[in-house]
Every structure is written in structure tokens, then in C-alpha cells.
Figure (cartoon, rainbow, N blue to C red):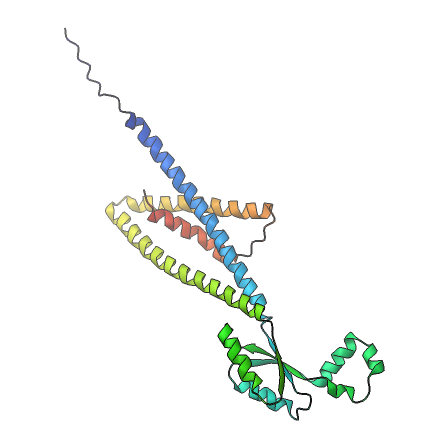
Length: 258
């Protein structure tokens, strides 16, 4: 009697396929968590530069000294403001300059004579009306110097240079982010619509996957936040923007659907 073994040949892929799928899911969840953590650090860098630029903006002043024998300081201030390059931020008269000098060095009061007050120059603090590039500063200084009764113009070019570099970096971040989010949004809408329309049960699967991706992104967010607290690294990121990265990363998981 002939016995025939009807068992199908064993395929290694029958066992490895589920394991490979699980591994693929794990890698994807890990990648989303890492992406969210990286996004937090990038956002932190943006807010760090933004805070630094705001700090520099308070130091972007140009001191314009008025001649000692000027008959009308107000006229000089009006002429400077009318140029259109700068805005008058503060005016300090010669009497105030003399009073401040006495406060810093009371010994001057004992040796000064009634005419010494007139030896101190009045000055104004002015701030740029636009982004202070090198060309702008040269043009501004040249224009102010031509105003009658202006004796000296003083400012620190390094502060202006650092400020421009910081603003250029912020502008790059904003432009890149706008393009990225626009493309990201279109891909998310298209991918989601196609996935849901493909099968009726995909709607429930879509919601389930999105919640899982949210959890994965939240783990990455919490991980980098905890690491920064543990290492005493100062995170300056706006918390509203930071939490926005979690659903954004979850949406990325939908776009990169298996």
C-alpha cells in the first residue's frame, strides 16, 4: 500500500513574516520617537536663537553726541529723526550727564567750578528702523554725521553683526518650516484619504494607528525632556509648540504607512 505524505513543504517565511512585521513596527515606532525628540531639540534651538536676538535688540543703539555749543538740541534731534534711518530712543541733556558723572565720582563735585557743566555733551540714543546690515549702518552713520551740531557717533558693530546673523538664521528656520509643513500637510491629507477610501474598516485602523503613533511620539518627547532635566540642560522651547510636535510626529507615521 502506497502512503503519500500530503503535507506542504515547510516555508521559513511562514514563521519569519510575522516576526519581520513586528520588527518593522518596532523600528517605525522607535524612529517616530526619535524624530519627535529631535524636533524638540530643533525647536529649542530656534527659541534659544530667538531669545538671543531679543537680548541683542536691546543693545542695538547708536549714541550720537551733540556739540557742546549747540543752541538747540531739540532741533538736532528732529533733524536726526527726519532722516528716516533711525528712531530717537532717549535724549540725555548736558545737565543730566553732569549729574550722572557726579553720582559715579562724587570727587568731581568738590573740584568742579561753575562753568564745568557746559563742558559735558548732550547725547541721544537712537535705534535702527530696519534690519541693520553693514550697508545700512554705513549709510546711517554718513547721514547722521552730516546733521549740523553732531560731533560724534558711537556704536558697537559686533552687536549689529550678531543680531543680523541671528535674524537670518531665524528666517531660514521659518522658511524651511513653512515649506516642510505645507508639503507635510498635503501628503497627510492625500495618504489619509486614500487609506480610508481603500477599505471600510480602514477608518477604525486609521484611528488606532494614530493613537499608537501619538503614544510613540509622546515617549520620545518625554524622553528628551527627562534627559534634559537630568543633565540640567536649559530647554527654552515654548511648551505649546513642543506639544504640537507630538501629533505632528503621529501624522508622519500615517504618511509612512507600512
